[in-house]
Length: 321
Image (cartoon, rainbow, N blue to C red; front, side):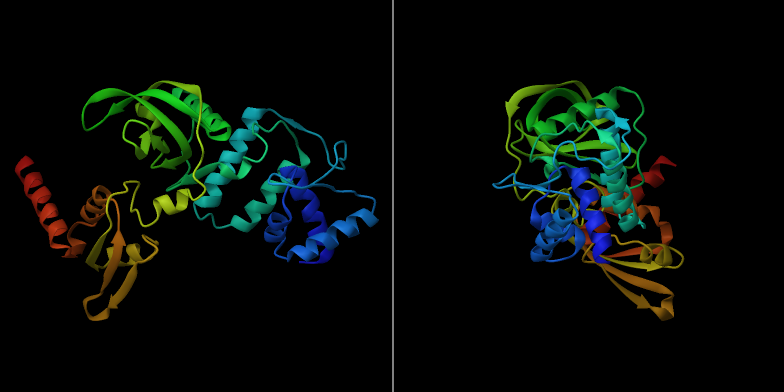
């Protein structure tokens, strides 16, 4: 990218984020930190002065009143919707991810936005997707999503009444929300549950009477939604197990078209027109569902315990018919 392009992109980024550290700018522009200082000097020579602030929440910013862009106002809810859609597509492996990045920051730079965020907390917000985007209609879940989003930004706990599917009961929960994500057209929150004293996932459609509290929490510095979901076939995060499957055509072709886990190994069995699929996976409920969805085109080789569970499920299914 040319120097002029980087200077323009640097202005767009600063307009969109309002303040960025030298390290962040260097990462975005794919240059070293010394070059960012050079860009700052070049902008000053052009009469564009960047403000510099030291400290933990410091960085470069455009001075107040500096604006060479068209002003169109977005209200906080519109900004929230745009940011959440961007985060969701960004983390779901969107094909035009680089173009999306550029387009998002151009939009944010050219609009006058009232951002619903607190200083220094922008990068703590996580929103992820495990499938295609879910449409959040103007219903109760949408309102809960906004409240949880606000709690994540402000680092305040939420209280709600939650329906447990397995116990068939409602329980009061107090949770420190870390992230919101979407899976199979349903929205979930992941956070530290005071009752269970561990990270838990909560489906928003099973929540009622949710409210924000004034109790603050500290987001763990090492928390990452991507790591939390790593090698989970779905959203369940139980103990990992090595799964070895022999998958025949046509399911073999469908299987190789998707990355099911970071550690997966696929070996061609050409004579059998099949593949050997190996991976260390979490989420046994989803693993079993996936295997059953392939019907007679799959054979479980390992682990034997998983094979026996599927046999039992198939036996029970036959009895139902």
